[in-house]
Image 1: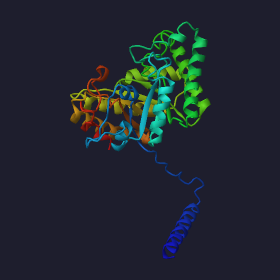
Image 2: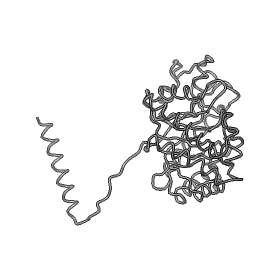
Image 3: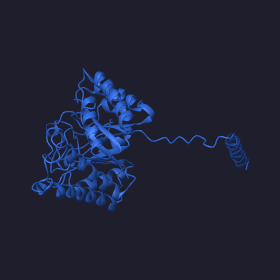
Length: 343
C-alpha cells in the first residue's frame, strides 16, 4: 500500500505541475520530445545463399549462432535486404527476401527493403532493366516498377512484415532503368520513376518511409545535382540515403565531408538523412572500428536530430565470399573488432 500511495502522490504532483505550467497563459506549450531509436544495422542479402553453400557463423565466443542473432548481440536493430525482379537463381527474389525478412522480424529487428529494379546488381555503373521490362515503353515501364514494388510489399505484408523503410532504387547516382531513366540524359524520366515507386510504397502503407539512395556520401556536388533534379521535376521522397566506403587512410577526411553533406541535405531539402551502406577491408578491423564509431557520432550530430542511422553492407561476407573483401567477419566466420562500434 505504501508503494501505491507514493505512486498516487507522484501522479498528483505531476498533474498539478502540468496544470500550473499550462496556466501561465502560453496558448502553445512546447510539444513533447519524441525520441526515435538510432538505426544501427546491416545489409545481409547474401545470408541465405551463404547458408545454402554451407557457410556457418560464430559469435565472439566461437559458438555457432544465427547470423542475425550475432548482429543483434553486437548492438544492431535493423536488417536491410535487396530485391531483384527475376534473379537467375532465385536469391534476392521475392520469396527469398520474404523468408529473410520474417527471420529478422522474429528476432526483433526492423526491416529496410532495397529495390534494385533489375534482375541483378544495380549501382552507379549499371542500372540494367529487368529482362521482362526491356522492350517496354516508358509509361509501361513506370507501371511495371509500381506493380513490382506493390507485389513485393504485399508479399511481405501477407507474411506479417511491414518494412520501416523502402529504398526506391539502389545507388541511383545517374538514375535507374537505363537508358530511359538515366538522369544525365533525362532527369524528368528519373524523377517520374522515383515518384512511381514512392506512390506505390505509400499506397501499401503510408507509414513506410521512402529513401532515395546515392553513393559517395562525401560528394556534395553529386547530391545537389541529383536531388535538385528530383525536386525540380516533382519527385517525392522522405529520406536521403548515402553510401560511404573509405580506406583506412582517408576515413577521417571522408567522414568530415559526409557530415557537411548531410547537414547541407537537411538544410537544402528539409529531409532526414541516413548512411545506408558502409564498409572497409575486412583485414583493417581497428581502422574500420574507428571509422564507424566516428561516423555514428557524426550522424547523431546532424542538425535537429535528422541523422537517422548507419548500416554496414554485408558484414557477414567472409573468406572471400564471391570475391567481396569488405565484410566484417574474419576467415573463421566470427565478427571482427570493426562491428564493436555498433555496441
